[in-house]
Amino acid sequence: MRAAHDLSIRRRETLLKGMSAVVALSDDEQQQIRTAGSELREKGSLIAEDGEHRRSSFLASGWALRQEFLADGRRQISGFLIPGDPLAPFSYLGEPVSDGIVAITPVEIVDVTHIGGPRSARLLDVIERFNLTVARDHLQFYRNQMIRLGCHSAVQRMAHLLLELHSRLMRVGLTSDGRYEFPLTQEMLADALGLSVVHVNRVMKQLRSAGLVQQTGGKLQILNRKRLEQLSEYSE
Amino acid sequence: MRAAHDLSIRRRETLLKGMSAVVALSDDEQQQIRTAGSELREKGSLIAEDGEHRRSSFLASGWALRQEFLADGRRQISGFLIPGDPLAPFSYLGEPVSDGIVAITPVEIVDVTHIGGPRSARLLDVIERFNLTVARDHLQFYRNQMIRLGCHSAVQRMAHLLLELHSRLMRVGLTSDGRYEFPLTQEMLADALGLSVVHVNRVMKQLRSAGLVQQTGGKLQILNRKRLEQLSEYSE
DNA sequence: ATTCCGCACGTACATGTGTTAATGGGTCGG
DNA sequence: CCGACCCATTAACACATGTACGTGCGGAAT
Image (cartoon, rainbow over all chains, first blue to last red; front, side, top):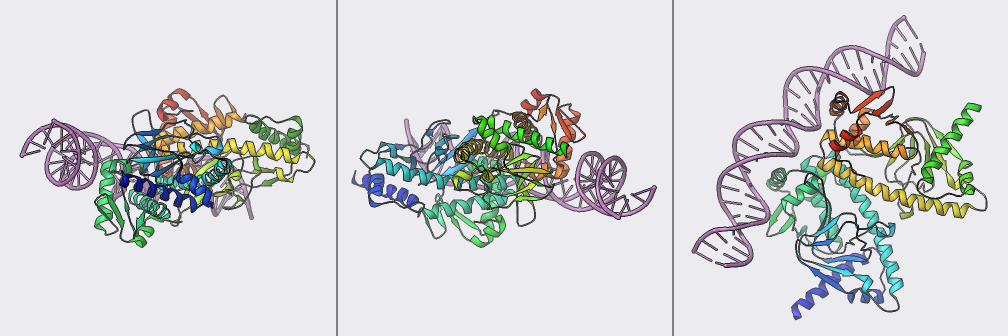
């Protein structure tokens, strides 16, 4: 019990860290987010459906993905969600959740609309500002993704994605020395990068045997960031 | 002289049609847009640079494209602008023009900030609402584009793009019976769809000889919309 | 007219990536 | 301890697409 509670606290701190990196939060507001209601969902569950309005829901822990299915059964993964990410960054635009969001790992979702108290309005305003900034990042991501899919080779796409995940995770303090939790299967990578599973495997093997990355025990480590960046023409 | 003036009037009507399809405009506001200052730029000129703020500039006539260059000289065209489109749809987001915008044909740019008069504020508000809606469309476009690039074959991508251009042009009254002005070179198509020029040529040939489209005198005509839609899994 | 140049169009060949199928290593529940 | 399942891995083959050329048409400049 006690251990579980500690864990929940720590997750909340990750979320706070993610938000603080973008907007200034008063002690008051931080406290409100710490005590906001949350929801645990197991790996594989559908967190939000296409069209749902979740303007103040955030991923506090775990990973998720955004996916869309085509008529022939293929899917495009349009992005991955990591702790600190809002479920619907474009909400202020009147845009609901755009694609289905699915938990990759067990996740904790914090929904700030459950907050009561006098200062809610102002907090919601801060959240709106946070979403706005994240939305801008997302636009950037979309463009990156278009360039990845349009101009890059398989190796470049993979390298680019691995680097991008690293910087995003670093911002919320979930990396240590180029190393981070990596719950993505090769099938997910394939659907995100527009490749076949087999080819993802080839590419990862290539990156590993070139000494650029290492994968052990559900973690991924970037061994040679410079060469990875050159390879992928990564810019940020 | 007289002919040139008439032409300019007609262009303005196209812009108005595009905006009216999205937000309601009072007679007053329409008149203001009719009399707003404009700027003519020749084919090939750089209209706006990455980072510029053009929150109230619109394309009144002609086509343009958004492009981004990679280190190795390749470029990704992230979208095409047609009459009625704002240069910076994400401006209310604080986001400037995201990539370089280049004129494909001679273009006329209307900038509504040049408007004087008492009702400017309200008009700018309407414009903001217009941009917001267009931004939502753009998000949709980005997702479409990601799916195109990630999951679709060359033929599908091409079919999808041709159909999308048709519906957008139809909304501003620039089509007649499946036929529309088509100023894109195969090189532009290639850079937009992530293909090589040669392959674009192959694909267009394929579409033509299958009797799906026809290309004559700078115009493109969709001959068999149904089969094109099936082919591309077009949905909208 | 002549030259030039952009662009559509074609051919031959190379290769990246997809497809299919089979194998083996983990982990979980019985 | 066993089987069931998910996932990574590999091999063999097919094919879509890229690369490197070249041709020819048509418009614009001179």
